Amino acid sequence: FHVIKLLHNSPVLFGRGTRVWIVRDDAGSFFVLKDSWILAENVVSEIDFVRHIDKTIKEDPDGYLFKNACPSYRIGEECVCSSDTIRGMLTKKPPARHQRRMVTATIGDPITSFRSKREFVAIYLDLVNMLDFLNTKAKVIHGDLSINNILINRLWDYGPDNSPSHLRKLASTKANMRLDPDSASHVVDVSGPVNYGGTLEYIESSGMIIDCDFMRFLHQDTHQTSGTLPFMAIKSLKPTQNNLFRHHAGHDLECLLNTMLTICHYTNGPSGNLRQAITGDEEITLNRWFVTDNRLQLATLKSITLEAFELLILPYLPHYWADFAPFLHRLIEAT
Image (cartoon, rainbow, N blue to C red; front, side):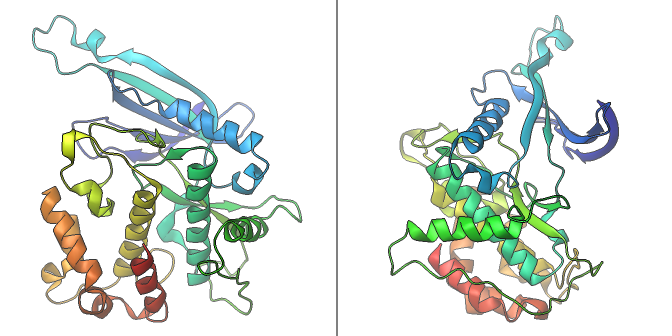
């Protein structure tokens, strides 16, 4: 593979040191190369989970509905190099790390690049459907949903009955069929003109979930929680009995909701249009989610914020999201 462009570089000098590139093979196809240093004692293999999801999508009768919602595995190596080799004869060595490399397709766009509220909602519907598929069919929990690992997969080539919008409608209909009549809702096909940001050309798109570093199988207890603090579920921020914690699908949904809430709070339109600063920003409760590193304090802060939607969230939502605010409130109550 030939390196084309750096997509991500870890901003800290400790931890996994993850770097991500766009690469091209000799045939001219583009892929994503992920390089990271994983603790040698870590029993979770991202490569194994990506391949497991690939296999589930290919073998499950409904798997084709989710082929655009996750990266597909191409090639990888669990241990390219060991930190023990580099550290040589040091008498006091930090825990050993292995360099893992993995190449996948597809290349997604940031979730903040949504071109309209219609696309934004459609992308999140794809993400919810994909989490449901991971939970019910692949039997896995993601464990670390954040604004950095949910993407928009924009497609140009697809068959007449294979477009992301068509697959989305089928997936949503099947999901509703599994619900009881009281909680199920009709699949709505919104028609009419849409104000797209940027190009006016219609582009099919699908939500996509990446990064399986902290993925685990259902009903698997772990000795630590995982996630990115501002987006973590409230329960996963609290101390646990016996130092064991079990992630479940509800935690993934709560993390996903927190990413939606963040985007609605900080953007004032499509294509990454950030809102203007507000006088007294430092006192806005939701802003404090991103500067509080004490987990118990953050759990309390999140609980207060979400319970007091009309007092602590609604007044600070940009005007662009005014008509979406009631639905956001209902999602918070449901989650």
